[in-house]
Length: 476
Image (cartoon, rainbow, N blue to C red):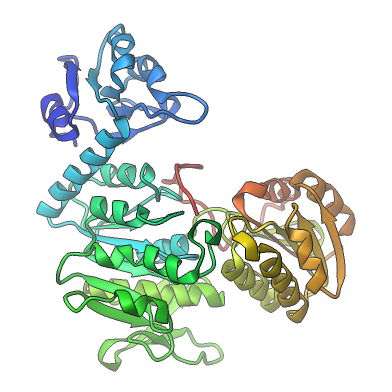
């Protein structure tokens, strides 16, 4: 937005320009946007949004004093912002609507410059798929991806506004909790390629059925322009009613347009792609669920004319399958960003397939599952038993249901601090420990307390990019 002056920004956002920026400003417009006054950097546009605890607009003056190019706030905060010494002041009755309008306009300008957009959604694995796809594309194209969990009606517009004008591909993640939300995000992103990683029992409490969840995810397909590409799992019948004849459909998975070949000992990952083309990759990960995410990413890259080959190094977003070597040969799998029945099973499978000794699972509540929550938790316990988990430690009020289906050593505690304290007494040398639960349970506390004894040579299969903030406005 650096070439947009204050008048243009006000017009695009539908805001009133209360004060022009100072004449000493190096650029006519801001270099980006932020909603956090504490992180407002020189040259940025601070957008003050009302929140549950406080109204961001009340911090406009602080943002300007920190060097922000300007602020976009509700009219009642504009007068206070004017008392600062410099910076543009824009007033909008609904600042979030102003943010949305700015992002839509910038997306259109990016498109005029040749930028293509990939939007990714799904019940689980969308962040990892985004990370994989960004790694594939960045080898050939100037690629920008949304940081961590910037995947909501707030985060996605900020991710769009952060893309520089020379971006060739912008990879965006889309999350939702209810109907209509993916449609809103799609209208902002205007994707050339839409990817639905999967459909699973997530947010059942709000949507009720898998069919409703599929319809909500399929809003991405409905919002694609004619001639765009939809990438979907071949084995998901719930998406078929939502396919469009005027949108190209590419499938992934066994029997799809992109499928994994049986793995040979010592060989890399082989994928059969379009026209039976063979793609051989050596990814930095081997987890079964991430290999399926790799298929979705390769299919999306193919829609943009990019075919990867050879080594593929992926730095996954934090709290998603990080592996940390602790004292006495203990390995911690920190996968506590969120949890649902699909991702919980995948994480248990990874624990079972990689643990050289005892398998310890610290599993928290899976939230927003509705009336079937007790049964779904019991089934996770049964799955853990079937995969040979030795010790189960449940955390929360729903997770103890897992013990009903579990046959090994089991313990239950109410919260993360209690789990961390008990776990220290349970661990033995060479144990592998999985920590996973819905974000509301806060199991990162367990990982942080155990990780305090990490050795310098710790191993990570994931982790945050240095370009990504430690937290953002997102949802699972």
